Image (cartoon, rainbow, N blue to C red; front, side, top):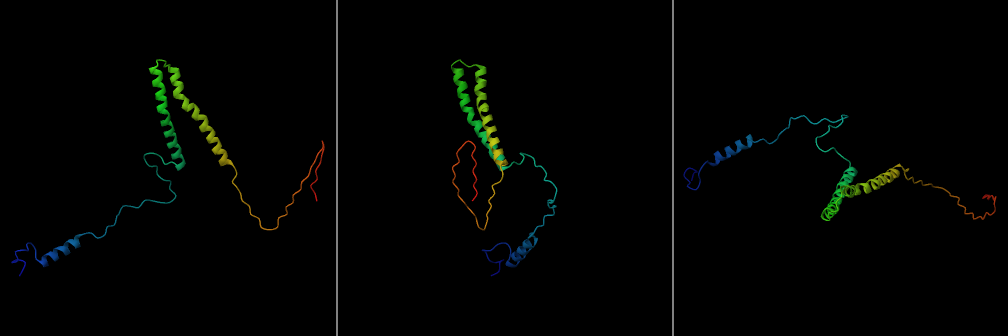
Length: 155
């Protein structure tokens, strides 16, 4: 029974379907080459990108800690101001001192931490020296008394 007389089949014959499939496969792109020029590399400095400038991990962590610490001081300050306003003892000078107190305490602490960090960075590197060979070790215990005393540790 052919495809034209078969009531269950409609449309193309097997040969027509195969020819159509081959045409679709032939027209479909199987590869693509991007012709845009590649980015340059070499000694040229990088181009600054828009947005937040790049920071080191340490700087990022410090900035994040400063933000979180500054946010932690807001609720106690607002509570103190609300209590003073509610008790009708709110003095603008006192409110200013309360709001500036966390910064006044934090500045010397941060300066001291920075000084200690710089001192640690300026310290000479730890050097491990390993010797092979004979070692002469002598332990001498002496007791020197007197106003003008001289100790000779010679053997």
